[in-house]
Image 1 (cartoon, one colour):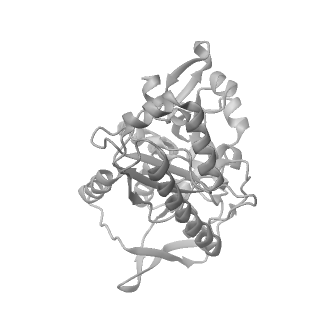
Image 2: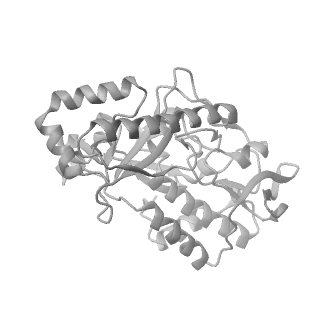
Length: 356
């Protein structure tokens, strides 16, 4: 299994050295989904829950009464509309709602971290993977020289071999766009400039691979992402901010609502394999009626880069959604939700939480 993920060039994410087993390599993540099928599945899950789904809309501004959020104004082809709510959950990833609501936040990003980079993804199809691998194995020096030339031309020399069973001949390019200067995912001018350049680089890659690399002779660009991917951004300053000290101290909070696997901090992960996240990381200090359920949870930049990916965000969302329902039912603001009742409810849902 380790070789399977390494051969797909996915080892950087799926494979880790297990320091508790003498450095032996282990597969820690295995979920790979077809995003096109997932889109429909997620629609069904939302509609099946009884929630109302409203697509093609853009959250524009919160509706405020003093320091309390009362709803959100959004824009769409139908014009400007508003949704009123007793609790609003900001799951935008970048804090688009809590920033406009006047909540305290931390927008600093260290350019050494993944969270400060943008990304552009595209897939190429009709690739003869077997022929490519034979070339790579038989002529490693030539292969290396070609990839170096592609990089010099501004293309993307690294790709993942698709491992979805129904997608033979498809390779994935997930191309980080690190800049010499810090990127700002809130700057639409910068986003536009990098987006245009990233797409040009994808075309350069396609033309070079098709012309020069065995196995890619009949390839074509299957699809490209509709927009740049952002790895991180603004983070709420909550009632608690998750820090490295919390991890190395193995802190278990009375309001722990999420337990995460700690896989990426080397020796620290070996000694402290789990991380507890308190509910207070989802609650802004000042604004009432608001919760955060995304990568913008209250955390240090250096910690956020490890715990802002999809599996943790699913957990933040479950915790925030449950807390919002309990707040409405009890007629209290989210920060006054009973921690014990919240944790008991999450445990009944199957969430694995410590007993404390």
